[in-house]
Length: 387
Image (cartoon, rainbow, N blue to C red):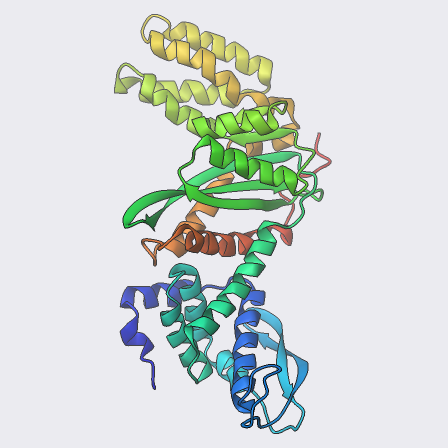
């Protein structure tokens, strides 16, 4: 049977994946090809592991490592061996020759999530023979194990903790719902950013955030000196419950946006924005507080609701002044997490709608793993020795 990949999948999906790629860690590609080679050996032997069969054509004899240079870097595969010789898996060579098909197979596992029949057909294109939905499920389970291992890896000290969320469309019980993708970013001892964790659930309620934050602590997160986030009600309550004694920096970008709801007329928008920016850009906290007092007085009569809001809320955006001056610009907002949101959305656009929360979590984890590794092997984000 020949599987026509171009006719079965939407043109937009193929073009998007071909253009963007899905270079999400060599280990995941390694798992897929290793699984394909084991299935091919099983077919060659006409018997499964430890299976007694009159049709057996030989005996498995372990694996031999083979390192191959690919566009994703060097990958070491476990090539199955047969005791009697005369066997070499075609899946390895076909997989390496058809990197496009390999990426599409991975994309299907991430984006379609539960459509094992479709993944089976794509894997046939890659490997050259039929594989069952059950075997595909087993291969996907191995990928999920790697993603879960990353999500559950031990954590250590992180002086700063950035928190944010974005939403993806997920189908549940025949309805389309908004699922919150929660993300936590920290700082390593070397001063590099690292993605500490990700969680997906329907809604951004306090219980979801609290469970997520508690899981970070249970994995060993400690040494947190400052939490940076917006003022979402669920997150705010969860932060108080889990990190109640730790200073909080309210995202200045979101603060400036929130102020618009308290302006009596739109003509004040630019003026108020400039006044708030001046407060945030002050040389130090005393100077910022002095500017805040002047701004509150300025609007007390013309915009009393705005003045009251400024006096109550703006101080929550000044906490970062207590930390090293060299760190202030990157501590005063959670905007650094916007790149994470954009990257996940860029990959998820081909799906439009996830079939369940698990498939959404699979894609988000794969993308965030890739970005986190780039950060941890890249340049210093905040110098630990800054004054």
